[in-house]
Image (tube, rainbow, N blue to C red; front, side):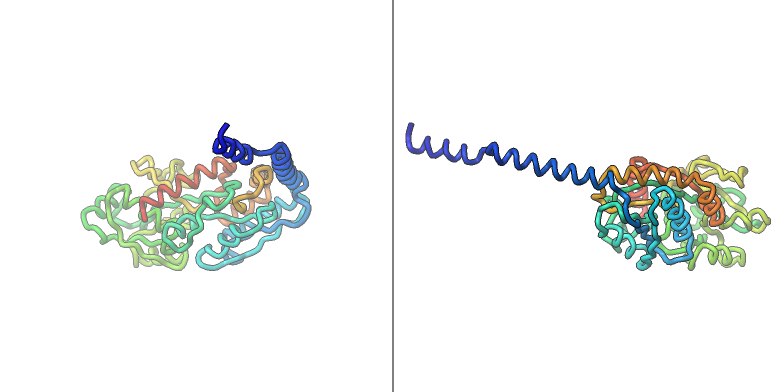
Amino acid sequence: MGTNDKTEIDAINRSRPTRRSVILGSAAALALFSSAGALAEQWPSRPIELIVPFAPGGGTDLLARALADELSKQFDVPVQVVNRAGGGGVVGFEDIKAAKPDGYTLGILTAQLITANLRGVMKTSYKDFAPVAMLTIDYAGLSVQANSKWKTLPEFLDAAKADPGSITVGNGSQGGSFHMLARNLEEAAGVKFKHVPFDGGPAAIVQLLGGHIDSTVNGVTETLPYIQSGQLRMLAVAGTKRYPELPEVATSAELGYPLDIATWRGVGMPKDTPAEIVSKVSDAVASAVKSENFLDSMKKIGANVEYMNSPDLTTYLAKQEEVYKKIF
């Protein structure tokens, strides 16, 4: 054997893992696995924070507090709501993402998580979280005044097509879910509206009632009292299911426009939270949303409870992102 051959063999032998290194590596991996398992098994042993990316008193905050009450009962530790408002949800989302992934930080996720990312306002996306469960999905309706010349959605869209940009459509916020829903309808129908944002959905309804705009896209529960009183007419409700309180109003899907944008609220955790803990929280949320207290609270704020587990929420978020990408 030549000198070069011996040198090559020695190099190969040095590159091979020794029995000691294999044992140490296996032990380290086992220790890491065991520590993660122990964390999940002992969790929770102290208070949990539930971050709300919006100010106190709003619908998302009230939902979070109702959820926190139910989770506190199930986990037998306090679940404390922490409001981190700012940037249309950006501040709160960033705080949830940056929290230690030990199971002691939950957060409310909303559609702004997707829209802020696509608008370039925030680099964080839904992929930076461990989706836990969907809580509510609130669908919207396109409404006009009761005495409007447009009696149906096809009539409304024909007018918009004949005179692009002439029909005004109000919404509760620039870039919000219901603004995006109107944009979604534009895309699907091949028309152009003049979008008019207001400071909240109720403000848009006031302007419609006063005849200052032609229509609004609002949550069904927001416009329902005015429809029942005969002041407004809803031309269609988004989604695939008719609204129980308005069985005569067709869905956009029935009319050929399967719009898939809504105001939704889910629960997420920092991305690397142990899967066992994410699963436990998802199961706990499934029980919480069935409780009488939670359902009563949702009825008061007009929220439509629609639970999804972690895998289903993950799929839903991916589809929502694809829908929004077509609009932006």
